[in-house]
Image (cartoon, rainbow, N blue to C red):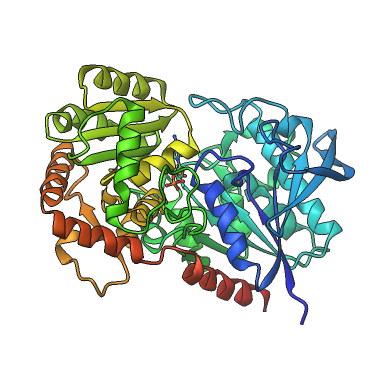
Length: 473
Ligand code: ADP
């Protein structure tokens, strides 16, 4: 039987371009679905993408009318590891330095850029009979509206919220420029405190909505985590589902990872990675526990907590390595701490290979996120044998079981849970980590257990397939 066709639309996809977990998910989830669907993945052809390296070639050109303007658009394509990729090229969308803007501030014309992207997605569905369009985050959200309002299109839409903190909210004056009629500027549709909210279009018009963990699906219905959309999500909650993300266990595998000085399959095999990283970062203390933080330097990630706690952590018998991108003032504060303490290293910027070497070297991953829709770092840490220290929110609550309840038969990974999102709780969790590290036998038993568990997409992909089936009935 012929497979149904699925267009998976994202604003970033690894290995072409990545700023965070969305790119990882857009890389690995479509691969987990392709046995059941004919999957094509689409993303903008940003200037950052290396066309030559990935053999990206032009396929067709057309024009898109948006408001009073006509935009020339090119569709490019490539095949990578048997996966079909399409790239949308339009100067407005693609010809600039970053994807969304600098760390401090998004591009002024992001509203137009990603509205145009959504019009192109509709055009793609008009040209090719995709049965289903899987849309991700605010950048693709308007496509749900455009497709629902085009009665000639039969395709269904599934919309995934990866992070409710980024909704794509713009001045209402953009409406004529993005060609959207005033009648959509209502509470039931795009209006949000007198502004235009793109994510609302995804929530209101998609046939089904998912978010990236069961706990986050509940949290976003509350004022504490709902970012102002809790009421709107309550209204649409019958079509909201929480499905946990997975990781690409081929890419994130210490047994085969080319970035590592020595591959390994158990706790004992991590030694070479640890010595190598410490040397590279100018740190001493191979016998002491190594704590790492890897992530965006953003409030969400608990950076304020980390900065407050780091000097006290540095007084303990341990070493600490931080890798983070963005956040000017946060970066300055972290660097100032690194200058004061010889056992603290801070690397600014985005470095995929270094991040792999850090997961491999680490004894513990510190991840004190204040909220975390799913989080991938803790699963990558499990796979590389670093014990995560996390705040019990969102996907962290769904993936990290508390150490005190450790049992070898469990299918889950174990880590240290903060008792609250405070500096005191973080310090106490780090001390707990140091103690555990001192009990070598137990420490290695837990690390080995965590490394053996399954963090792949296999289970979650089945849940997506069930939802697809339901929506296509
Ligand atoms: P986010 O909220 O940033 O999307 P996730 O936990 O979902 O967070 O995914 C983060 C992904 O980005 C992981 O693969 C992590 O290893 C990677 N990452 C984050 N910051 C960096 C960095 N500075 N350098 C390299 N990789 C990073």
